[in-house]
Length: 360
Image 1 (tube, rainbow, N blue to C red):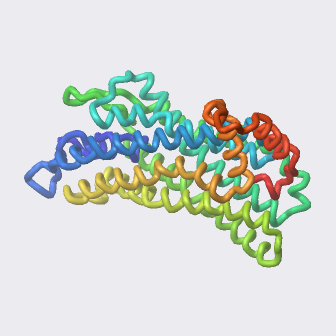
Image 2: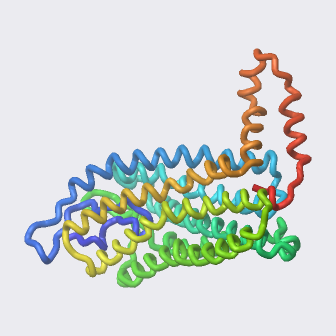
Image 3: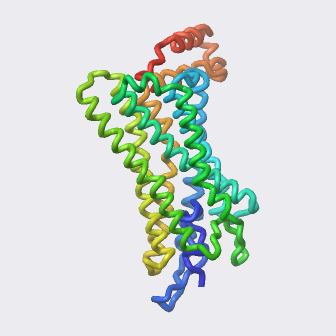
């Protein structure tokens, strides 16, 4: 009998959210057939993994180009935006590997299994932590203005970013240790293999993901935005309000897209330790895992969209970037547009105020 604890599931390391083989349960004489789940996942997950990969890669690469070309990392907010984009790129880097794994099997060896799992998990945690840091950044900028003038510097932003990466890498270390390319029934999977302490490590992984990935960020952001809203009720600074709206949108998108996944992940753990039992429950959780996982993965594509539509200066920089790109210049030469136009616009943007209220 192959139990759910032996299956390659998201709850143990963001792997395909279904058991590869039929399962048997003590409460029923017939094995739990999951052919329908396997057929569904074989086209559903690779399709959406690929979509998230291309959208996330394009959007976050554009963010990096704009930050380096125009903003030049002159504020703490710029440092956090840069690191958030890098986190999202790490997150999408593993998706082509998982896409092939879901469609066929793991063919990339044990070393890549460990590395991809670790990088993937690091991108997940660091992305969450940088969204949280951006909320704290806004909190100080709005609520503690005098303190923010001294504390919100590039140096402190860089130091905070290094700490975040250290915590994210450390929290992801179990993936580097326990992930293995393991063959069962002539089918190779990349999954976490915990050995004798299987139940303990599954509980640790589930709690770590829910606490670090949802509970702590929620508490921190709730505190920050409660005080920000109270302060802004007595403030008429529209630039500050726009900046807060953008970060607030990043936070809301994160929770809307990740909360369902975290709930299903915890239910998967309850199934792993036989608190929840039954074939129908197992299959429904497999479907729910795939749908909520896909929804959650789309969050890394949405941050650049939020920057574009809610960040006034960011929108201008993106438009300027496409005006200045070589391809656009070549296409526009027949139109008779002067080449100096983009340079002058670029210079005017670079000489604008870079105060923290306008940083976004």
